[in-house]
Image (tube, rainbow, N blue to C red; front, side, top):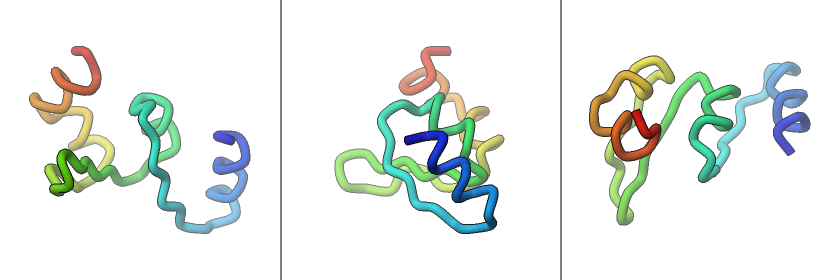
Length: 62
């Protein structure tokens, strides 16, 4: 599936991906959104997402 999505992205299409594997999704992402309990908790660039202290602890295991 990720190879297919990568091919679509390479053609210049925008993609909305819902994925539980955060690390794998971030390999393809330019932007990230985090929804918890039905509420938007974060939105921004991939770099800001991985530097967020809460996200690092709760989702990236850092």
